[in-house]
Amino acid sequence: MRLDNSMIQSDFHMHTEFSTDSSVSVRTMLDASVERGLKTVCITDHLDVDYPPDEELGDAPFLFDLERYFSELTALREEYSGKLDVRIGVELGLQPHLGKTCGELAGKYPFDFVIGSLHLIHGMDPYYGTIFEGRTDAEVYREAFRETIRCLENISSFDVLGHLDYVVRYGRCQAQEYSYREFADEIDEILKMLVSAGKGLEMNMAGIKYGLGFTNPHPEVLRRYRELGGEIVTVGADAHQPEHTAYAFEKAGDILKSCGFRYYTEFDRRRPVFLPIP
Image (cartoon, rainbow, N blue to C red; front, side, top):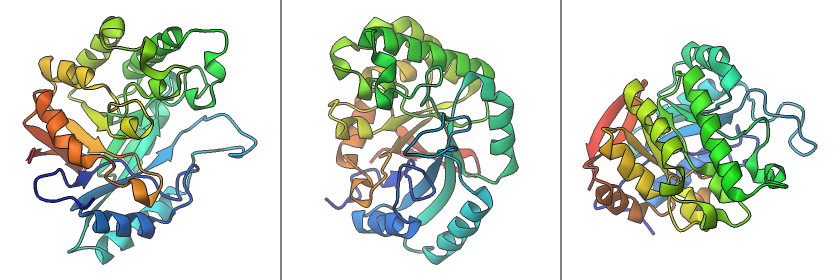
């Protein structure tokens, strides 16, 4: 489905071959974005310092050459000028001990946008399922939110918190043991910390792709962020393949409106730009 002027046309979460979990060229993702009718995209490849070594992923997964990244993306930004506005971002993996490292990385390079995302809980990625062994989904979810709080206490060098309830994608029963109300104490603390620090929240459409039936975070969490005074919300498909660019974006505007938002956000040189929801 090609997006039209009644839909959000800005995808601020997208991966390419610079991310260990994608093999798709930047050009291929940009061409797919043009075909989908997007006007603005931000490439946000994974940079996860201290991600554990893996037999398939290698000794230092989710790290890449930032100099080459900026060189290639800057050239492509100029090439696509006039048909697609290309921004250069990064998705930093948050862990409580990485405050200084994340600060140095985010400050050293001229990113347009920095997503801060929790992918590891005590060094374990929920994607692989190991952390759920011998524990209920709810126990792991609560620990993920508490780990997010610890990250926010130690790291401030990002613009928007990515896919807040990412962990729910990989639970044995996904959302059966998850709701905003069940984890309101932890989630409210996270949201209050974001609002107090002037940080945004991402609406990640991949939750729909992963079979949850809702975005990450759940619309109830987005609504609560707005109730607490949060205004900065970006929209991203979290695409790792060209067919997933702007995934479910035809639903994005209505979801945001139902949560009380009148604007969504892009970032340019780390500054939020507010645009009315079509």
